[in-house]
Amino acid sequence: MECMKTAAVFLAAAMSICAAGFRARAAEQTADGVRLAVSADKPAYRADENITFSIILENNSGRDLTDITVKSMIPADYRAADGSNPVLRSTYMQAGGSLTGELVLIPERQSSGHTAPQTTAAVTEPLETTEPQHTSSSATETRASETADHAGNDSAPEQTRHSGKVAVFLAIAAALSGGGFLLMRKGKGKSLVIVCCIAAGGMLYPASDVRAAESEAKSFSVRETVTVDGRQYDLTAEVSFTMETEDMQAAVAEYYEDNSEQIISVEEVEEKTEVFTEKEAIRFMAERGFTEYPLTFDYNMDGSYADETEASPDSDAQHPMYQTYFAAEDGSIWTVFIVGKMITANPASYNLQSDLDTQVLVSETETLTSYTEMGNKLYTTIPKDSAVRLKIVDQITSKKLNEMTYEEVMNP
Image (tube, rainbow, N blue to C red; front, side, top):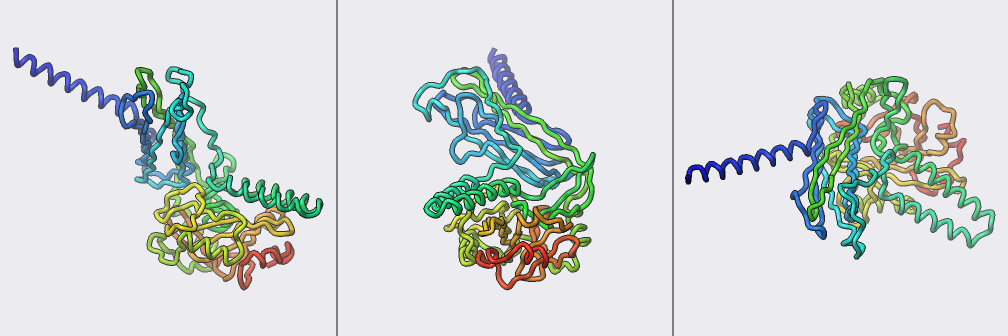
């Protein structure tokens, strides 16, 4: 009899282990070698408890991934805790790479002080994530609005002109924002267009095809179910990505070879010492007169994507690249970049107006330093005119950019 009881205990334990194993497998999925897993910190919660769940994305496909977005669906009756991001992004992930995140959900009844309507296992619509959500956008808009308000103390024509400039700035800033490289689809294939000083995370020379490459856009989702006071709630994550058929790092290296008169140096970012901290970069830009709009960064020193985060004047953290905007008195809009410790300015609105086949960048040297997330490297090159044309000035300052005319800039 005792043996039978012992056997029953072992059987129950085995069934529990199998059930747990089944549940863990049900909360993950692998497609084409890409694995997405969702895991809650426990299976059951009280109605007043926060739910914490982790998300893991692993690339075991043997191929490069680009345009990666992982969206978490927020269950009804819950909201994401402050600082807890329901969207994870990466512009590039090589084979063997991974992306992880944690989302904390707070019961609405806890935050609002009343009981929210109950819905069984309902899920809210996912966040719209076609365009990156930038942490600095609200700050930028606020500062622009404040500037427009100050203009109200002047004459009416001046106010109208300045308000129009702010509107143009916001429109161009929205159009030019976005981390990493820009992938332009052409026909059935795709050309990798690497943008320097236009996209927030631009890497090389503007508007130049690296090479046509076939790719496949894919997506799938995974769901973990938990109970809250006996009710079931689904924790769902959906991943979308593009699977490349070519080695993107090799494509970038080939592009530099083809579009540079000379490659001066190629440096691993994590081994680079000539890189500003956040507070150093803010001070450097302030000395040049670039203080009207926030200074932001897109990448950390390990190459991870930071989704355009505003730099802090108290931070000693380093980043390979920073960017800000400048609105000149003639209405032109500029993006100003620090890559490593080199400053470059892109006359964004001038370039949009120009009929030139290549873009013009304003530089203090004949060399261009650019960052690529694919391999996490800094390239210093002398670019070919067919890739980018450099307008050389003694020093890039807000005063200098304000004095430069379209004709002067676009005829380097």
